[in-house]
Every structure is written in C-alpha cells, then in structure tokens.
Length: 112
Image (cartoon, rainbow, N blue to C red; front, side):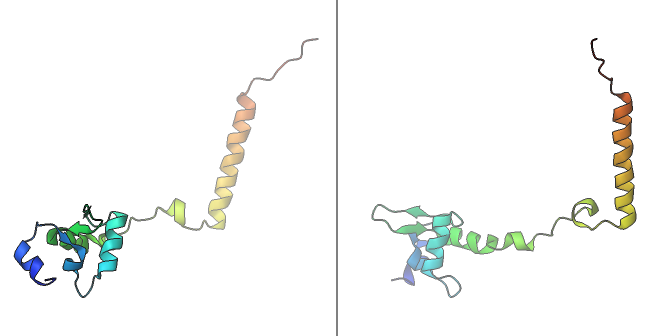
C-alpha cells in the first residue's frame, strides 16, 4: 500500500509521510522537517503528518539551497586585519578629531 499510494494519488494529494519515504529521506527525517516547518505538511485529526509528493520534492530541492548561493563578499574594514600603518593613521585621525572638539567646545566660566 505504501508504494501504491503515491503513484495513484498524484502530486497534490495529501498522503501520510510514511508513504512518501525515499532512500534518501526516512519517515523520521520527513516528520522532523514537518515539525520544523521546513517541509509543508498538515497534521491529520488522528495525529499523523500528511504531505504531498510535490511538497516533498520542493523540500528536497530547497533543502540545501542556502549552501548553493554565493557568499557575500566581506568588506575589508570588517573582516580583514589592519596593518600597522593603517592603525597609526586611525589613531592620528582620532587624536585630530578629539583636538578639534576641544578647541571648538565652549568653556564654562565660573561665576565669582
């Protein structure tokens, strides 16, 4: 019965996950994916998970899709190490900003 149902039902009919098992995906892995929300599935009134052949195919196709996407390029400021000269330039720029702030800030006068 397990092998007959998917062939007779077609791609959109809801079937128990046990009927949609393949060599690569066991009933346990499909049930876990359904609980996580990775596999579109519905829970029947008696507590069995139901899914369609099409939904399982979509899950298998999209399962590792994030690993197939190209990675974003890391900007040099975020991930790269700075050289000694770059860190010295940053330090001198910070000192200059600090000196500029001191010079332009109004000084408080004491009331005598």
